[in-house]
Length: 90
Image: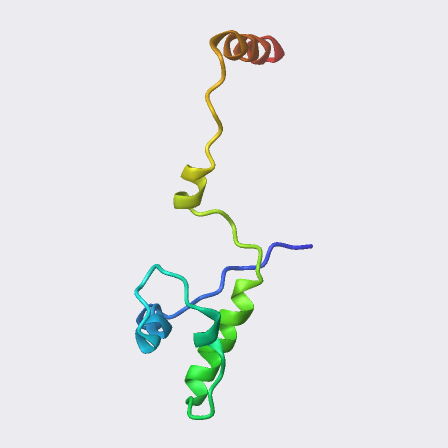
């Protein structure tokens, strides 16, 4: 499957759902807030639907999550054997 291009969100619209729902930026929006209510505008319905769908996507790790999932350092003897094997392969 071909890699999909990233979704473009207008900079002025980034964070507008958080602001409208009163949820602090950077925290997760509770599922109860994402349910479409009868008085919601068409734009709000689109934003809530997009957010519900985006939760199910396989998100690539960000710098923050990649830092949490770092690999432990290798012991010195393993590191030297790996670098020796790489030099030999060249």
